[in-house]
Length: 544
Image 1 (cartoon, rainbow, N blue to C red):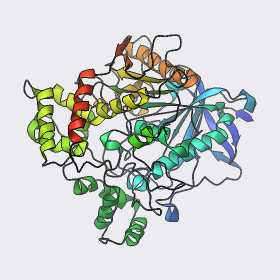
Image 2: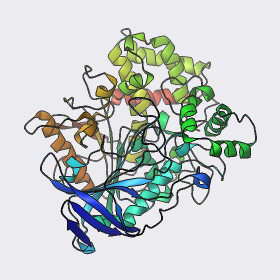
Image 3: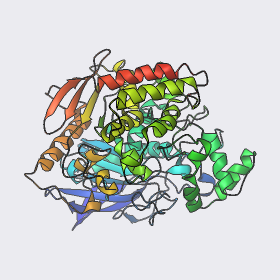
Image 4: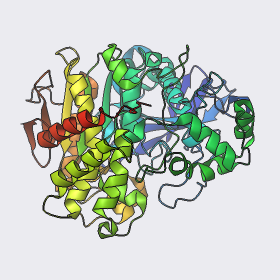
């Protein structure tokens, strides 16, 4: 099955022969790297705004030595159109500790990573997601690119343009894994999907989707679920029409709108998309992206055709081992994305007033909005404005509020055979991701995305974690927790990490030590339950 020559490795999969390469990690571990493997046809022409189609086979041997193009998007750090962008972006990467001698030897757990970036930025590339730490624990790691922004999530709410193409790309990539991953030593019957931020929300969506049935067996959602306010499109159809208007196609004819959008260049779609959300929802302040997953019209290819709350009520959540959690300073990323040079420029009164009603779907000028604003002011700022409490409030509003809703939902289906585990990541080390990129390294606490630095080698920073350091110890701890969960469905086999259940919500605090505690940020959770009751009194409350 697998022939190795010099520093190369050759594998034959269903579509043809691939030539990859051997890599030696910082820890001296040799693994095989196969990059830029096509899993879908280029979604261009008539395939734009359509579900993806499987890639065509190729003749001879295909080099799998470098990553494929990134989906059309702005570069996360420069905010300029990416240099390596192409609509022909449906490629994945496979990293394996060893190739099997026969297919029956394919027994390693598979960890399928879904990158974050607000459904608008990013890729599965090794700049941020080097597999070195995880493959050391003898798992097969898969990363992939999927469509982003308008090209990945624009919806006219019609059968011709339903939306969620990026999620459908992920489903196709998972189908590719079922078909081919055994050739790399991976067990197709032991696949864990995991992701952070928008990647975590994507993981959560796939656990709720009938289209992903049987494609994975465990799931980890890091700092993101589909209940987060940024994770579900509020006005998808209006956003599509507004984007067409920016492109010079102001019309009420949806067929003409679709023709206009299909004719636009990828660069123009990316350039104008960033203006759309504030045009269709002017009260929104921190959330940046209009083109995110939506509730689609019902159909045979619909990924999500009901609101997530209704899917839970209907019992459509997959009964599988599930792990989810958050970091302490999640809200700091919202400040960073706004580009505010200092938190002190923010006005508590003004920002809370225009922020809270939007996230809770209440009328900005209504009585409920006023009541909510005053309660939040009292709860978070009773002693006056404080930067730490502002970030704490943003963390709740944009991350923990949604995550706690999901924890509550999951508590009703968690059991010994398909447990749900909750974590709170509090380790404040010397290696971090977003705090470095945005210049908030002086802040104490774990920002949104900081845990990724201990799961993946971030080659963009050209630094290594040295053995014998506290950061090295955390890297070993975190990769062991994540890979043990992938292998067994338990993040701490033989340990004392209890799953949640109805009325009992334990979680593991992950710091320099592991400490099991109860009820993640209970006072905030109860406060937000009260806020949601107030919001539900607004007769105009709409879930979409």
